[in-house]
Image (cartoon, rainbow, N blue to C red):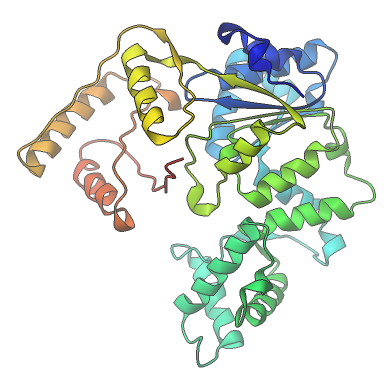
Length: 388
């Protein structure tokens, strides 16, 4: 296969998406470099060449990204096109859950199925499940729900990393077997369990459901955030279609805390089994911002993938405050002004993002949120970032 960077100029690399004819095209795309536009142009090219919308499936990691892509699809092709064609735009987990629901009789399930993270300490249903599990696995070493949660977290990590949980040693095999029995009795599946289960089920099918067999083209977004099990499932799905386009940015992995694997994207980008193209033209930020980002990339890794700005200008301001109170007062004024300058009906991309350095248990984020949320409409999301 080929490194298409040598065939397409930096300004014309979206054409590689339009011209892709077979196999896998892997793309490294930095922030604001047009990956969404490239995927939409890919959809347009497929349909103009006679392909149907039913033959295309877009997969991403989390629902919010899928919803953003739906909005971009509607802007590109119109609401009428979206409502009449109903393109397949979903998360990989939604894809897996639909497959499991459709074929649940093959793995001994009947009736409605339920999905949850069984170790989520903030989920009441999870706590009920663990309370029910505790007396079934209790020993002198396992006497509390937190102890069970710790073991199950290790099992979930094994599922994400394509490892066999029973290889973790005692008491994991006993806890796992009892947990699976109880999950089955409740018709409940853990989110991390769904991908390996769907993958195994897919491999066992003698005849695939019509909604899967229709798919000839996969578009996979934010590949670096998928864990090894998810990337393995995508590899298996890719083997049975005409084309696959995979895009991602190995310099950012918001979900490394749950196994997100930038290494999987890096390996794909140097694989001889696929074509590669990199998007380097940044349309989102002006030159001074891009130059600062490039400086960070140079410091972070030995082989930085620098971006080229489209627009000149931009502004980076640094402040030093005498006290935390002075800093909070400034942020209240500054962020309130930013909120007031938003359009009347702001879209997700119009929002304002504040990044705070990681601290134990996210205490810095919690502090600033508590200080600012009474004055400014905001939400918070904790993520673990990998330096690569």
